[in-house]
Image (tube, rainbow, N blue to C red; front, side, top):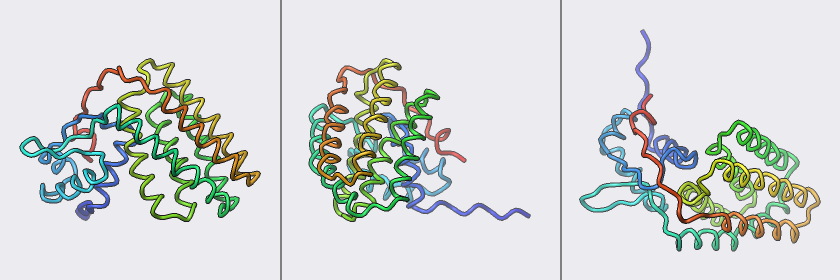
Length: 233
């Protein structure tokens, strides 16, 4: 007799929702109906609410009285603010990373770039953008600064929403932008391998400036997914 599946933990539910956001499976504005989420994850509705509150604290979900929860819809001003803050902290994080990085840490970054390029060639732009974010998070993880690393994790989630909402709508434009991102990441790797902290910080700042410059604030909204289909086992 097969044992009954164990219910998901709150952390597991949270991580699956964050992954869906980073993978661009939950477009900005998507309504997060608690009953449907509970049914999809096979838990009670009371287990869903704390996860939504946590996501709201991280600015990736909005909770509105009498209207419920929805994936945040970043404004143009918020988009610029997010990139401004990233330019403040990520040059410092890459400098600290260079002071601590082992060959295995650098190899993991290279693998992330290869996976990103493979996703781009396969036309999977959602996965490519997710992997681009992972590249930045890996640098933060091994930079030895827990506070800034935690801030960056929130900012990467919000950046994913911003890119989903404001990336150039044409498929080729998205692909070209991601390709440039891969090339710039390889430039960062070269500076990291040379242990040139000043150059790596400069390249990081320029990379984030270019990403922001490619935002288009006239993109059409994407259709919302079915939550049961997305999260149901």
